[in-house]
Length: 490
Image (tube, rainbow, N blue to C red; front, side):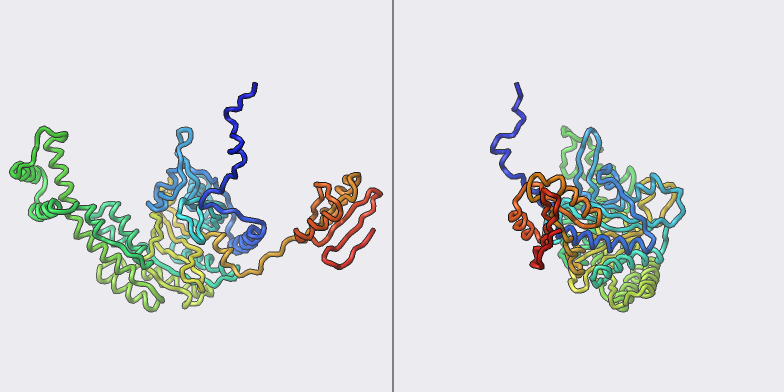
């Protein structure tokens, strides 16, 4: 007796299974367009010496947790499967560096690697953005300084030019804000929030500082008391500070016994809040800096003087300015007009592994349509286990978005011949004829439904097939041009 308990009910079996939200199908026409664009992009990368590689779609989740940034981590499709934490890759760069660490550390540098494949991000579906898309890009491993930065920026612009898109390039340098934040006693969560805020301020999105401060210090009268107490006890440290805090708590009637925490734990908690209250002024100053940095945006001749003034005012390392100026000169040498380049030093791009020059590339006639992005990530290889530092930079782009923006003429559908047996007994001979035509280079369909000649004509016209080859039982072959150009009988 067959157990049918696991089989779907009749109603379940006949209900259509819907496509997952945020995922997209590509029909033949869209696929041909994307394939044409992909071939153009890979041709550009190949002519610059980049070799295609392929990495797994599934990776250990830890690979992307080490330095991806909170926003990217929140987008991952990650699961626990058979006691292993695995994830669908949300991007390629970490996978390429993992491959380098495993297999390429003894190879001579630089290495030029390219890739094309699906990535998965759990984002809010909207126009031009889906949860699975094809990422195309390259990584230049072992190229320090502006020479490498300029090469990958130039490549990102050239791949767009190759498909008829005039690019607009926006260049930044995350090293400026990292230099500022490294000089301050801020916790990592606060640093992450400041970088997140800077990126949104750069894009003109509102950011409210007060909720973040409330998260640091609490709110209401208690927070004010902590701040007052912290101000009065600054400079006091060690056991004396702990005794003073304990005495103040006892004097104010705080219950120190009978609870779940010891007096020492209560004092430690108060001291932690005092230390956090000290962060308020630092956070305010940091927020003011990232706001001022994000406000600098425009043509290089306007942005660089403003950036230089900000760096001098805060006594920061001026070397990022020199690096940006060298990159600009090299881009001009590559043939990119200076008026196609803007500077935006408040760029952060949401990934923690960037260390230097960053960039994004937009369609010039659609200012908000970002098509490519990338930058320098000199620390990532060692974070993933490399034996020695590896200067590196790269870029990636979304194939589907570029294909929609491309101005290439749509690729023509292949010209198809339909071969059909005039009678069932001619099927074997029709198969021979179809195979001979394919060997000669034609695209051929063979009628496998046993239609009549008139039904095959209707089918061919609906499918855009212009030639019908009827094979008769006596071996004769009749060719009909369905576009009205007549027919032949062989």
